[in-house]
Length: 253
Image (cartoon, rainbow, N blue to C red):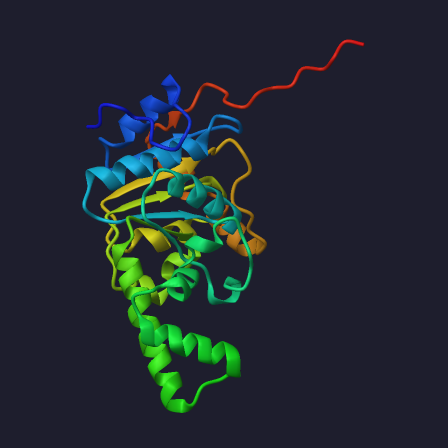
């Protein structure tokens, strides 16, 4: 158990957040309930930092939305951990605050594969490669991706993104899912089937739950999140109490 529960590069935790971090590190299943403004992202990043330091295994961090994944990726990177942000192929061209941490960008910037760099430059200049060079290019890309993913302390992606074939050979004993109350239950199960032994679900089951457009699916129970199901089954969430955002007061004129 660490002596300090705040993580380097992040704001100091308050008592409520420290209690949450300490509790999570000792249990296989943890639910953290944090209403808006309670510092869920900083708390989650601190938890991930300590989980990564206490265990030799990689930590998988997920959320249902790309925005939430990017925000958490940024905070985790600030702690000094080696982080990879895995995105869908369709999003690789999109810019974000953590673009430099994305797998495809780390592959492009890799200096360990000289031949791959030459092929990347050639592809950018010519637009396409010969069939032999294209085969070699794809093989080297896969090899480089595998090396980068294997060397990471933390891999961040959406819940659906956890089903990416590039993660299929990896085992994640520890998984943290942010905004877990906004994810449909099957969505949350995707990251949990990759060898999970310890799971942390962060959210607020008293806020808006999963949005299910199909009426039959909604009636069948998909509007209930995994977080809420575990609460109903008797798992008490750790509640973040103290508001961390500054509330602006109206000026008296």
